[in-house]
Amino acid sequence: MSGGVGSWGPGQARLQRPALLEGRLMRLLLIGTAMGFLGLFLLLPLAVVFLTALRDGLAAYLHAILDPDTLSAIYLTLLAAGIAVPLNLVFGVGAAWLLSKYQFTGRSLLITLIDLPFSVSPVVAGLIFVLLFGSKGWFAPLLEQLDLKIIFAVPGIVIATTFITFPLVAREVLAVMQAQGSDEEEAALTLGASGWQIFRRITLPKIKWGVLYGVILCNARAMGEFGAVSVVSGHIRGETTTIPLQVEILYGEYHFAGAFAVASLLALIALFTLVLKHWVAWQGRRSLRPQPDALIQVPAEALQRGAAI
Amino acid sequence: MFVKRGVLPGFGLSLGYTLVYLAFLVLLPLCALVIKAGGLGPAEFWRVATDPRAMAAYRLSFGVSLLAAAANSVFGVLVAWVLVRYSFPGRDLADALVDLPFALPTAVAGIALTAIYAPTGWLGEPLSRLGIQAAFSPLGIFMALTFIGIPFVVRTVQPVLEELDPSIEEAAAVLGASRWQTFRRVILPGLLPAVLTGFALAFARGVGEYGSVVFISGNMPLKTEIAPLLIITKLEQYDYAGATAIACVMLSVSFAALLAINLLQRWSRRVA
Image (cartoon, rainbow over all chains, first blue to last red; front, side):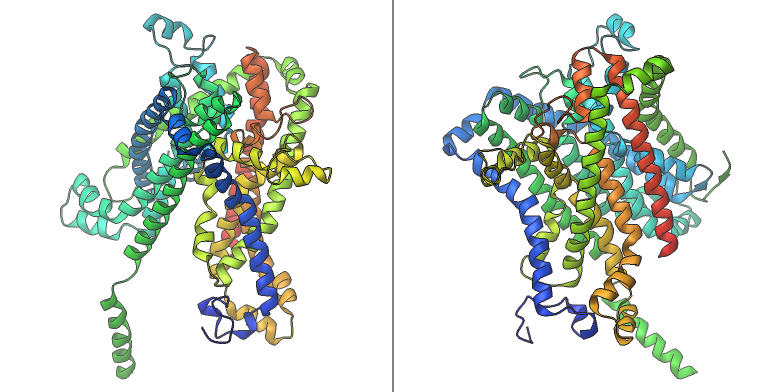
């Protein structure tokens, strides 16, 4: 790069606008402070997780992860996410269709209600299901008759996970559907396509990156949820512990290396999620970008129009 | 319900499905909480919801959440500014890393921060030699809530900063304003709605946060016990009335924050 600043220069767009640029020292100071902040709060905790996990060597690390209780926690986490994510996926696409294709009274209220689980504390979310299905809850007599156990059992964990991750797919898909509009769908309708055909052959290909993005976020949250699941789980080892709860149990028993080993699994999932998320966002942006032909055609057309005048 | 229908089919199906799913999973359970709290009677509710231990927990939860959200507002604007305006090695990596608190399970963040700030930890040891106790104190809670809130301000400010018209800044420069004057009087007013939205989101998240705080806070009643932990403690003692009352107070604060966020977003759309 020119100007002797190396790559520590201004962003591309600002190169031609010297009035919008701080001095070099100021830039370095701002970049340094911001990166110091991110390093202290984001990079350091991440490094601690992996370094502590491997502190006692690879054998101890594998031993902690292959422990039967940890394996059953992994299984339960996969099960809960495997139920919660598809449920919220179907809901999310349906709700996004409703909210982006029609105008009706109460629409913005509905959007607010869908966002509700975001602003409810995970602990409160767990509590409401204990009040409903717990041993003194509203449905306790019914559950006893049916010989069903929800709280301190697997169904409670699945329900709490579904509640917490409820808005994630709906939000992402709604944003994409709103940005894209419904011109193509309406054109298909005039050509005689049925509702299902329109959805499957027009809408779904258009929104696929948005859907995938929502599913990734939803899955990450479902696998990592701690507060709500902690309230309804009862912490029965090998039975109702998910991976985050297993981390808590090991940590509470001062088995730090083991706790961090199991935590490193979750950290790996988180890193994988971040990479996938950025890849999908990039793909989504690429699919929205106009085709190269279109870019050439527009100025040509404009020139013709200019010549005509 | 007044419906101005779109022409596309599927309105009835998607409306019915959305409402039924929303009602069973979210609305009815939340109603159960409110009805349960109502069953306590006003006097009893007031007594349980305002006992000294609960009051101390609210003060801690709300106070530290406010401080952490404020810290995130300052650093969030700085980080967003640096990511949008400058190019430097590692910028894309830093940009991706900002989302880490969304992706990293809170329990993992909790034990990692505790390991760092405990009296024997990497930063806890030097700090304790200076006489500062980081973990197991309100400072530790502040660290955890700051971690949790990082993405909110950055991600709300970033798109606004990207779309800011550079010619306004140039006009300010032509008229003789310094960079700092331009930032404070031209750029900052445009960013304000986004900063406030991010602040409110970070605050709302911090108030309800449990996983990352519970390991680092030390959990001493009246001192470092946050409100969500108090709910769990009461549940473990089968004090359902107490847990419900405190949950209701927290739920009202969450709703107030949600309302504020919606109003802020409407305002920012008008400003933009």
